[in-house]
View 1 (cartoon, rainbow, N blue to C red):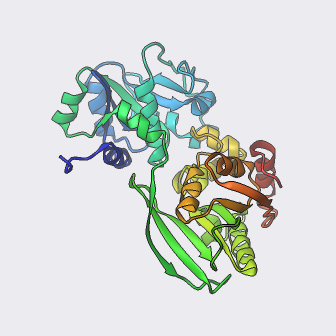
View 2 (cartoon, rainbow, N blue to C red):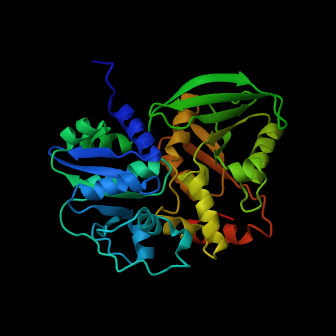
View 3 (cartoon, rainbow, N blue to C red):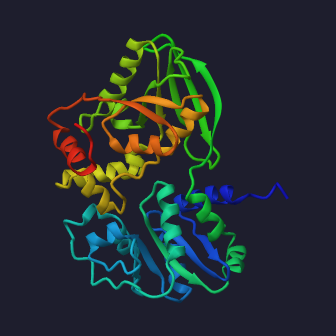
Length: 363
């Protein structure tokens, strides 16, 4: 029946469950696992997992495993065996790098090898998409579907889920309205909503840009601290305002405001990264210690919105070659790269140097 949830809706439930501290069951045929997010794990639920027997593991990404000196036998992840007396504090210490420098000796850590890890990998992908730490307690289940039914847990079909998670969720326009802006009184805000229940994204259109010519455009990822609070740790706020001002001066343009805070890791994880930066790590090193890649954003979102608005070519306001490459790859022609070099100060100078040195930004 159409009243039953499809796989996209099941995945939305699974993300919410992980954020709430519930376990989800991930299965591929008769093979299945119970997965619980390390960040939201409660003592009672950890005790229940240990009481089920078997060999529960804490799955972490290879980035986090490198910090822990754990063996990533599965390539992009490591399965760290939970000791029989494991506590929530032990799990948190492995998953969260906040106290790594104060208590660097976590081990000895034993990493599982042999057997499949694709269900663990899917659990980590779900945790990332839920904007929580990419660390998941996983226990093999002999009868996954029955276990999910008995305990009222969300059941995720791994094969169907993997196909959905590999693709960008389609975006649909919801509404648009005129909004006079400081940069231009001829402003209009368009709201786009993804099918997967994720955050909405916005397009700020200045004037009436022609659809048959390259439009002055910027893909701007949300930055609560920079855009709203005026943080001096980054150059996001000045870039946002400078881009809108340039569009206003030219009389036309479109700024895509994408809700991908902290390079796609979410505000809470971004604050964790900031705390690590205070300990002496640069922005890339901080992301890696948390278990994330340098940049977890999906710029296909910007391409999708531009196409839905009728644009096929842009003059892209950016210092990031990755945005240009993704636009070209997804069918948006970049006629010109327009530099956007603003906002450098004493607090973010090292951050900008790291972006140039490690992420290839053209500064």
